[in-house]
Length: 75
Image (tube, rainbow, N blue to C red; front, side, top):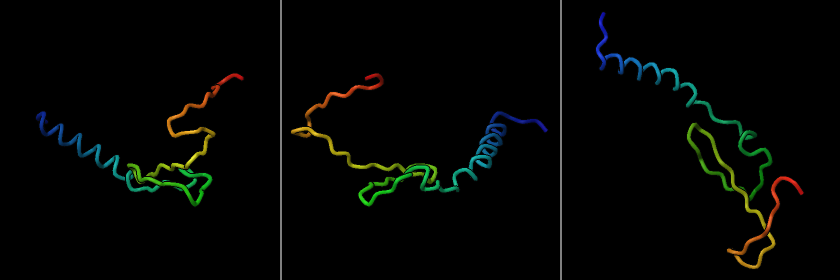
């Protein structure tokens, strides 16, 4: 049986879909995206049945556009 380029590309696409489909069906465990849940968390859905969690962090500034100096790494 000879494969033409279009037949080969269709077979490859089908093989990839069959291989990927079980991974898309599993939902993530909550401990992987929110290890310390809080009642004020904002949870947004992500691809692959995952989620991303955001939490409000209070910082000591006078206005919303003020800067606060931070040191990353060494003290």
